[in-house]
Image (cartoon, rainbow, N blue to C red; front, side):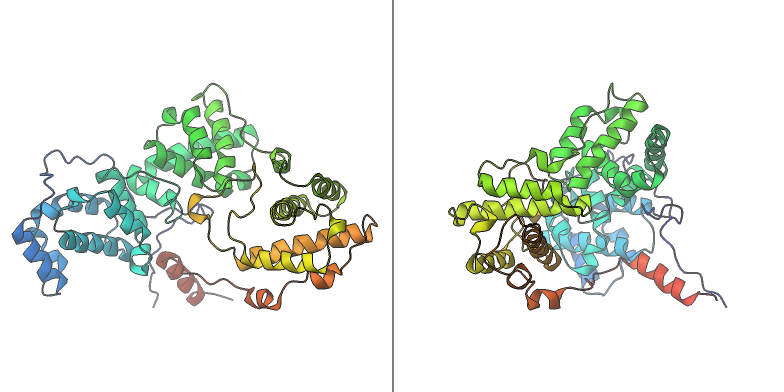
Length: 418
């Protein structure tokens, strides 16, 4: 006997999962006939109290909380029924209404922010539904600080409607394909950046995607990949006639725009010479060069007398390893480097990032030694080796898998055929 498992994602877009339900959107809902008084009536508070104490089920109290449930019911009707993350998000709203003694019209920016920052698992899985409600009813603004808390594409579908959103997206993506972009290239990050643009402009009409809106999105502190995709979006908009000309946003050589004025010229010259000589892949070469500038800035601020690789000794190498182990996101960032989302600044570097920085520094000193440029007063392979505690922490990085995806994986595992 076959049991069909629920599938909430469209198989045709593996790179940008779509919700399989209709997702008609909530942006066209009209609340003009609903009382927007933020005060919670006493009778409704009593009904919510009975529900919270599990004396009454939610479906049996909706008639007893008309003022609280009126806006929620209309939005609920546009969301998938029986989907646990959606159910949990609505329960959190009702809990919050009871605790704050107010209706949803009385929720302020901090109330919605508390929802979206809540790390509890039952809340985290329903963030896109909470955000959609806050975005439409509370006028909540889409910011870089919350952009990584949920899938932007899913939020755009819930708010503007699945069909309308993807129809607009497909038009722009078809334009990119006609311009010569490969499907794999444009599919990788394009949909995510476009969804962020839609949420920031609060519109799915390409006529509202102005040059100002694109520059604003690229400079607001989102991940660097979003800024790069803004250039592709502008190409599609210009090709379709929505803006006069495409915008040149792509940074072809990141290291050419970095301000190295604070770093010792001898160190910058050696790092630049290494970058031009090394035959490793360009992404690794650029990443290593960025690490060298970061180390050069650390030397300029803490060891001004160490101006070139020839000045390094065993003590300098040991201190470099120690500072890398204590380094946080944003430390010793060279002006002109890639933008980092504000919510990540000051957080400890990931284990793999620390290991990569040490590996870059070790490769640099090893190369300049075997090329005969300098004769270090230490052994790079030994004194710049990755500490054992870092190596022991490297490996798989387990994380919570969204319930719909997990159901698909479980069902696929049980339905395997030879």
